Image 1: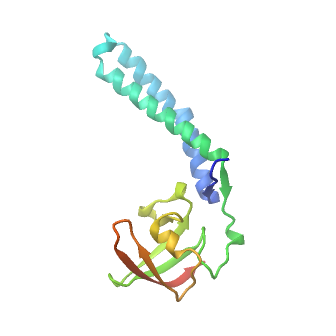
Image 2 (image 1 turned 90 degrees about the vertical axis):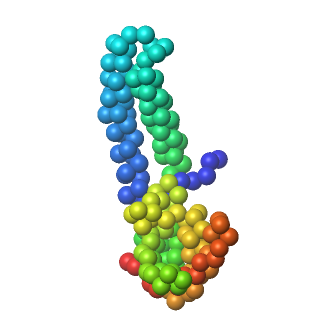
Image 3 (image 1 turned 60 degrees about the horizontal axis):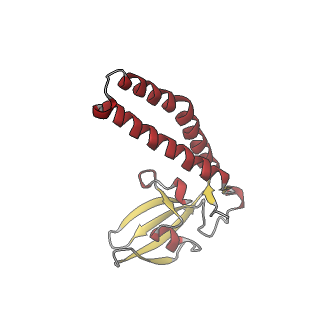
Length: 158
């Protein structure tokens, strides 16, 4: 059996919306690009056609990827999340001791991770190290480059 894809309700909705857009809008746009490019003549030297076909292949691969993910979704039940211990679905405020800078992260499944939005995967080095800790704990994270980072868990939010 495939590994479960951990998603919040919001993450599931976003994935379903992306799939719907790819199938109903993006496919039609690419089909139109291919149709126009075919009108340019000789397909062997038609860069517009090649580009549209490559884009079509990428979109179809993404559709298959999302469909496979949706078959293995395991929803994160925020109401069942322990409010005192960091787990998937937890939002935490931590202090990076070496930088003396605070960060707020939400621990999510890898399919939902987005550093720009402050969502880190439970499988990332920082996410993995934070799992199971509580406010007041100090956590050491060994990053892939081999360096160690020191964090203090300041609070679990919400």
